[in-house]
Each structure stands twice: as structure tokens, then as C-alpha cells.
Length: 134
Image 1 (cartoon, rainbow, N blue to C red):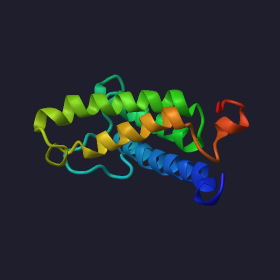
Image 2: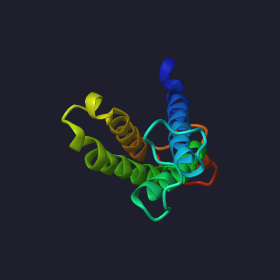
Image 3: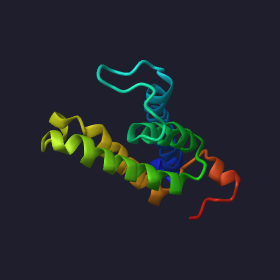
């Protein structure tokens, strides 16, 4: 590996960490009220509701993604969550992601799906625990 390719695992790690941090923020906003959610966004939904489970997946899953721990299975679950979120909540509001507010859900879905196949990049706790398979 030469040139810019040598940095690919590190940039994959940056993508994973930034995505996980922003995703974690969605969960903390739903479950903890911080940062304050946008207008019309739920705060403190019942934990066993769709929004509560979504918030829990976002908070815990986002943290695991940031750490690079259990990256592939967690990313698989989160990609599924985002696909469900898009088709249940956004698609019924219109056919265009920009108009129905679902563009972020689509991007998250495909970034997480990419992490399923690419792995965590560097640095990651998966590496330290011998979970990385290449």
C-alpha cells in the first residue's frame, strides 16, 4: 500500500467515529433531552416504544460504533434500524428524501452497511480484542 491508500484504514476510522458520535447524539437527545431536540422531536419516550427502542439503539449503538467495539454486528443492526425508520416514518410523507426528511436516515443506513463489510478501520477496540477479520 502506498500513497494515500496507506491512510485508508485511518480515514475509515474517522468516518466511523464521526458517524457514531452524531448518531449517539440523536439517542441522547431522545432519551436524555440533551442536546435539546428539534421542534416536534420526542423527548423521553417510553423505553418500550418504537421511539424509545430507537433512542436506545442510537445511544448504545452509537457509543459502540465510536469505540469500534462489535462494529460489524452493531453496524448491521443500526443499518436495519435506519431502513425501518426511513420506510416507516419518512417515505409515507412523500417520495423524495429531501422533502420527506429521510436523507439522513438513508445516509446512515448506507454508512452502517459499509461498516458491516469494511470493518471498523483504525483505531478500534475490535483490533485490540482480536475481533478484526481481514
